[in-house]
Length: 258
Image 1: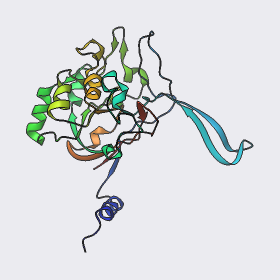
Image 2: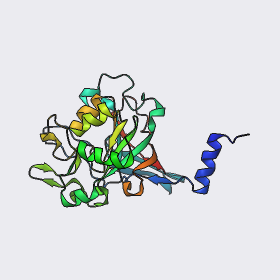
Image 3: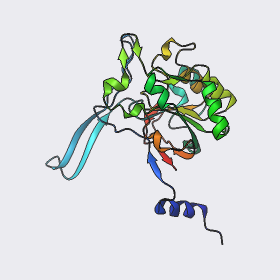
């Protein structure tokens, strides 16, 4: 009798035939958070407060309280996060069908270009060149932009704020509708603090990844790490956010099966 497919999967994990790659950044008080102009509301930084640690507050247990914004550290963006995605059914972290948290990944390496230009934008032309080598992006896939930006451990350098705003790579505004409409991807992932480029507030439309991806009922992943350990194609992402009622997003332990 043919072995059960889930048993085959478990055996492949145990044997190391399938590797699990952690695509998440550590989450602590030093984690960089998105910076908005002073007239807008502010997200909380990550904070942790010890409740007890095998002491008079609790002799046999250790635990903590923590607080942070939904979009802190490596995190998942749900469609309801943006005004363009607010009217879809099942658009919050507690109502998205759970099978959508498993999807293949296409990884496009732009690290060399970003090393020369922090404001580098990935274009449709770049993607089409990638497809000539690796094949068409299949519907329902994540597209991840590898920039190696996550290797910048200093928060100030990671945010790269100047007088005119942040300077971080991301998708060109013309690429986003191509991926959302013509390739029907499940979402876009980046290594920056958000899914859009640092200067995306100047684009038309502003913040095109948020505006168009969420407006197309797609997802986002931000502050990813270790994309250099993934193949251009073939990995499966596991991306479940916390089941926050009416949540617009959540810190997320993003895993890749390779």
